[in-house]
Image (cartoon, rainbow, N blue to C red; front, side, top):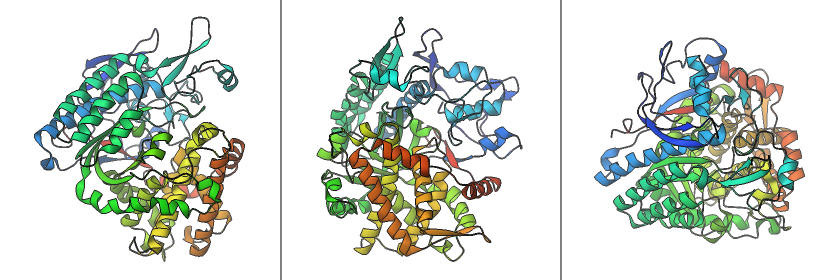
Length: 568
C-alpha cells in the first residue's frame, strides 16, 4: 500500500482502500481510514530504520527515506486541485497493483503479527523481498509465483501455450480457471470495473480543470482507456502535449512483474510537475536520434527502423509514486509509451525525475563510490554525469529495433520473460554510446571520464536490486561481460575498482552489438543462455555488496509522499 509516511509521524493518512473478497479474490472499492494500530502500538513504516539487529531490521535498512516535494507556489489554483485528485487516482492504482502482484493484501497483513515484518510487506507489496531475489520473508511462504497473480498459481507454460484463447497474450487480461478448471481470460477493465470507473471520473474532473489543451485532451482519452483497455489513442495524445506544467503517467504500463511470460502489464502512477527551465535545456538532444541510430555499432539490418521524430526530453519533480513503480527499486527516469507502433510512428517522451534522481545520487551512489571506486578515479563521479547517463538510458530505448528481422513478431513477444532484462541492458549500453558520440561532437561538456566512471559506480548501485529485477539482471550481465574483457579491474589490496578507458569503450561497443543482434533475431535461446551465464553474482562481487550492506549504505529509497508533503 502506498501511504503518506514520515520518520516522526505515527499515523497514516486517509487513503482509498480496496477490500479483497475471500470468495473470488477480486477487489472491491471501500473508503475508510487505514488503521495501523496493533497490539504493540501504532506503526509507522519507517520508525524502525536504523534500529535493532534482527534479520528484519537488516531488510528494512535496505531502504532510506526521501521526501517528495515541489515548489507549489508555481502552481495555479486549478493545478493544486488537480494534483490532489491525481494523488487519489494514484492510490487507486496502488490497490490494483497489490492485487496483480500478490492478491489479498488484507489477508496477508492481518496474519502478520510483527510490526516490522508488516512494514516490510507493505513496502514490497507482498511477502517477497524484491531487493533479495524475491525470497520470502514471511513464515509459511515458498517461492513467489513467476506469474504473480496474473495467472493461476498452478499453471504451466505448456498449458498456457496450448490454450486456445485469442487474447491470452494481451497485456490487459488476467488468466483464470472456470468452474470446470479450464483456462479463461478476463479483461482488466472488467475485474477492476468499480475502481477504474472512479479513477476515470477523477481524470475527467481534472480534464475540466486543465488549462493546457493538450493535457485536457490526454486526461479525457486516458479516462476512456481505463474503461476499455484501449490505450493507443491516449498514448498519441500524451505525446502531443508540449506545454503542460503537470503530468500524470497512469494505467497498466510495464510488464516486469510478469516473470512467467512478460506479457501482463501492471498498474502504476506517477504524479509529476515539469521543471520548465531544465526541460528547455534538454530539448536539443532529441534531434540527434536519427543520426545516432545510423551510427549504432551493429550490422545495418539491425538498425533499419527509423525512430519516431517527435521525441521529447523533459525534467520533472515527481510528487507521488504508486503501484508497480513504487515496488522495490524506484524508477528515476521514464521512457514511454511502450507501444511499438506508437514509438515508430511518433516517438516517445523521456521523463527525468530530477528530485528522485538526486536522492539516489546523494544517498546511495556517492557512498558506494567512496568505497569501491579507486581513489585516483573517484573525482570523476559527478551528478551531471549521473543525470546524463540516466537520461540517455531512457532515450536509448528508442534506438535499435522493435520488430524482429525474421518474422518472429516484436522483440518483446519473441523474447518473452527475458525481454525486459535485455531491453534494460540495451538501454544502458546505447545510452553510454550516445553519451560518447555526443561528447565527441561537443554537445556534452565535461571529461568523458566523468560519464564512464559514474556509469561504473552505477553498476554497483543497480546490481544490488537483485535477480528479480530486470535492471539488476542487466547490470549483472554487463559487470561480468566488462570484467572478462578487462574494461575494469579490482585492486585486491584496496578492494577498489579502476577503469581501463580504452578497453571500456571496446567492451561497450561489443556488448551493444551482441544485444542488438539477439533482439533483432528474436533469439530466445541465446538470450536465455546469456542470462544464465552472465546474470550471476560472483563471490568477489558478493563480498563487495556485503561490505556496502555492513556499512549501512542503503540499496534504494522509499518516499515520504502525499498531499501534506507538498504543502497542500
